[in-house]
Amino acid sequence: MPYKLEAIDLVDIRSEHARAIGAVNILVPIRAGDSPRVTAIKGDNTDWIGIYCSVEAHLSPVNAVSAHTTALVIGAGGVAPATIYALAQLGVQHIFLYNRTHSRAQILAERFHDQPLPGGNARLQIHVIQSLDVPAILSTGRLAMPTIIISAAAAYLSLDLGWFGSKTGGVVLELNYINRAESKLLRVVESRLRLKGWIPLDGLKSLPEQAYRQFEMWTGKPAPRKAMLESVLRQYAG
Image 1 (cartoon, one colour):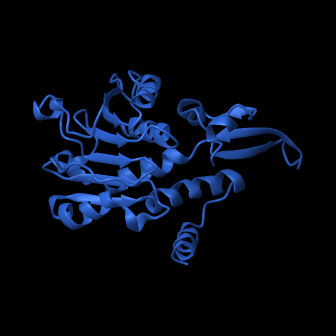
Image 2 (cartoon, rainbow, N blue to C red; image 1 turned 180 degrees about the horizontal axis):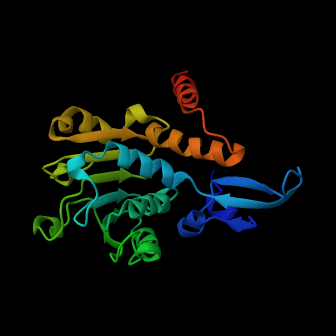
C-alpha cells in the first residue's frame, strides 16, 4: 500500500485474480526447483479473498446467494475493485455502486459490468447510483433489497435505514479497520438492526483471511490461523 495499482505493471506474472481486479497486493518470488535464485516475480491479489470469506461465513442460510441477491458497495477507490470481484465470485448478480465522485464509480462499473458470473449464464449487473438515497427500482420490487452491504470508502459514514429493508437481514462489512470503533455504520447496525437479522463486520474480520492465504503463498505451508489471529488482535488492542 498504496501502490497496488502501479505494482501490477512491474511483475513478470499476474494471477487470474490480479488481472481481473487490476491490482496486486502480494509479490511471490518464483524459483527454479530447489535453487535459491529468483527467476520471476508473480503478482497476486488476496484482498478479494478476505471479503469473500467474511461475507460467505456470516450470511445466514436464508440469505445464501441466489439469482435474486443484491448488494450495495460504497466507494470506488482502493479496495473497491476487489470488493466487486469478491461479490461476483460469490455469484451476486446485481450490485448497487455509490461513490462521492460519480465519474469514478462509472469508470469502475464499466470494468466489471456484464462480465459472466462463475458457474452459470448470468452476467454481472452494476447499477451506479448518484446518491445514497434508496433507488426507486428497489421500491418497485423489480430487484430485491440488498442482503450484503460493504463500505469500501475511506471515510466512515452513516446510511439511510431504508437500505436495511431486507426482511431476512443480511451482512454489513466495514472495510476501514484503522479506527473501527468510530464506524457510525456498524454502531447503527449493532444497536438498532441486530434483532432484525443484520450482522455487523469490521475490517479485522477480512484482513486475517487474506493474510492466511499470503502466508501459504510465501511458505507453501498451512497458515497457523489461531496464532496469527491472536497476534493481530493483540497488536491492534495494544
